[in-house]
Length: 274
Ligand SMILES: O=P(O)(O)O[C@H]1O[C@H](CO)[C@@H](O)[C@H]1O
Ligand SMILES: Nc1nc2[nH]cnc2c(=O)[nH]1
Image 1 (cartoon, rainbow, N blue to C red):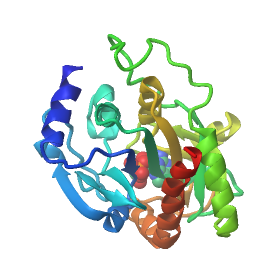
Image 2: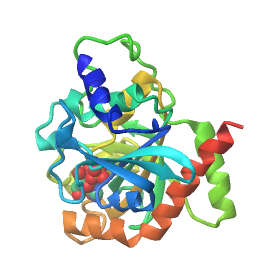
Image 3: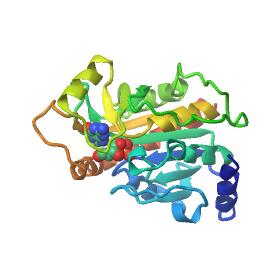
Image 4: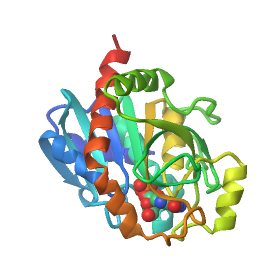
């Protein structure tokens, strides 16, 4: 656990302002940092103990800056269990954010739509998760400085934050769906039978990330919002075969809408604090 303070010390040497909001940008969604004013990028390799990102569409930098008037930090590239990282390393950025004093975390991802009312290009606010990866980043000794041994998971996101976001998006006539996200370990996409099983168990979306990050955020008490970009319909729902290139392409296609939703999400933080 000492590692998080070491990570913090390295990062802090380069900072003039501490971030209030953190974002994890999913596959193909890293373009959001282009909107940051006075950006400062720190390569993951410069941070001791920080894993490295290996997936296409995840460039492997922490980008600090100002976004919608607030000091922010974004992960351009997250860590997935299938890359070979230990499960506790997958969630390590969350504790770095905690050390930096981040109060609000916006997790984003690219996912396959299981719910047949969704379409590729939709943005979905994740309101619950299912741990079909059956791995937990909190295994091992608990560090009580960050949170309890047995964290409550009855409300994974900050519903007050989502409420403000929904009302802003309604006024702006931007569609936002809601659903439950499940993760698999990957890296193979699912079979049609697996998707039918996940559907039966109540999942609306499937991906290979997010769940360990959500568990860590709940553990250490950071306010959370999760936005998923449906980049494809899940295996077997349509005839198409799934490719990561298409996932990244769809994430890029919705760039204006996704950027607008994230802008509203960050603006909403100011309103929840009034
Ligand atoms: O969840 P993110 O990182 O957005 O990426 C999603 O896209 C990749 C598969 O195409 C997997 O890594 C899956 O989890
Ligand atoms: N597991 C999984 N991850 C994804 N990421 C983007 N689309 C998908 C999908 O269909 N399945």
